Length: 84
Image (cartoon, rainbow, N blue to C red; front, side, top):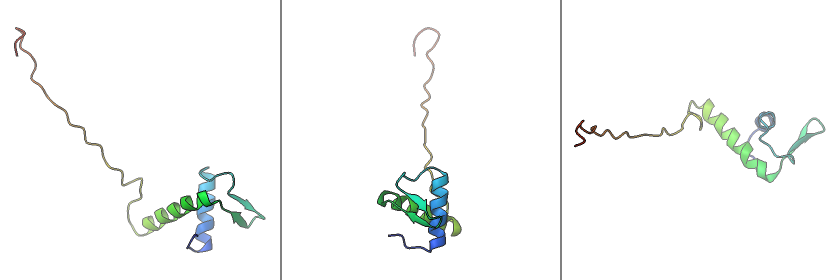
């Protein structure tokens, strides 16, 4: 169940529809009402949480990516004589 105001939910559904992230069973009918599948409810909740986090000044999930640390091992080159 979605616990938010109707305008926020409708906005989330429109944005997700424009991004083609909703399943085919979630659709707008009668130019006013949405039929939302249970599998899409979690997507809508996630989107609403992201919007709320951005309003609160927190970084979005995309901006909080963990950087990958790569360590380089430097070895000394072998001498010209073939000895190390």
